Length: 111
Image 1 (tube, rainbow, N blue to C red):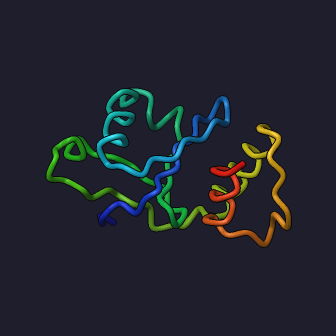
Image 2 (cartoon, rainbow, N blue to C red):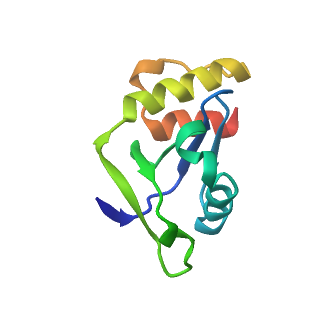
């Protein structure tokens, strides 16, 4: 399904587990364009609600602020990546299983 992007967008490099958050469509366009050839294989991308994202060439056009969103929510998968990332960075998250994506993201940003 196509709809407007909901930020932040989580970009996870699968091999390293590093996660970056993008809040700006132009910054997101730059990273997607830079890694276009390996994007599907080496990166996982989700919107703020945990839906997996994929990109079409039209995404690089300034007027296109929509994205193809998977119909299956992967919030739990995204949470597992975020918690592994927090562990790797030595950031302690209390009551991990009860936290929302926004709560975990806030701890990571401030941690």
